[in-house]
Length: 316
Image 1 (cartoon, one colour):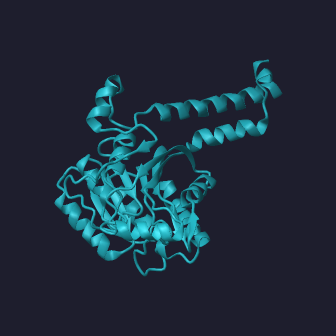
Image 2 (cartoon, helix red, strand yellow):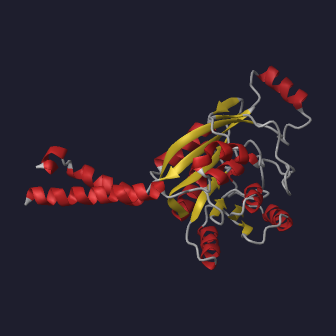
Image 3 (cartoon, helix red, strand yellow):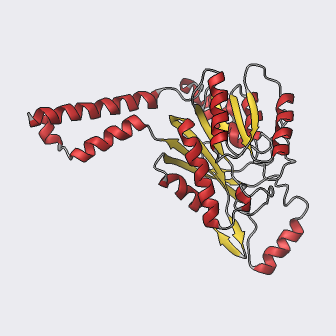
């Protein structure tokens, strides 16, 4: 009887792993791997861990006028590799809608959340100018850590017969490097690094459940200085994500910084400050790729590990 129970539990474990493998083999993009070399060229895919991007993409209505905007090439890479046409992308720190403009260009649906109302309004103005009537794209004005923002995202998905997003993009403020508003819920106004990490964790917790199992989250983050001391923000933020137990890290890309409005025309001043204070000018940032864990496979593996079933017993 004991051997029979063990066999049943092991069979359940195998079934969970099988369901997990089916999820993993389900196409998560529209790329034709039988013609993979052509796909890399056609989509301008970057597959290495070091990205050098000479200049900001200027297609469509993309522009770099907003402080802290990342380059459109980042969401381009993520959307092409980790979504299919007509799937859903959620950007929790939308800014001037760089990700959503790219969504419309690539025929994906996009939802953005932006804390500053005027920035959200400007983003939606741009989105209306980027024509693609086949997909939905809108920036919501709200706090990404709030239940209300999550409720509004779910309402949009439900209205389009969807319940999950297939890609989550996060480009939070780099602590207090740039102050984006006076709102105390703005991460750039965090009272301390610990407070910043707690606020960021609340955003992860809020939206992780809306991301489909097995799909990807992209985090764009850079390090910063505080009171003359280098803060390795990237490693601290990555630790918050991994400690949530919801994601596994798939890769980290180091990318050059280009088209930075904050330093534009001030190269001499920044060089002087760096030389005077013994510091270094940031010329890089990080793009981290995470995959959301499959709950079915994870719970199945946990059960079998708890039983400590040796394979030899099962074979008997």
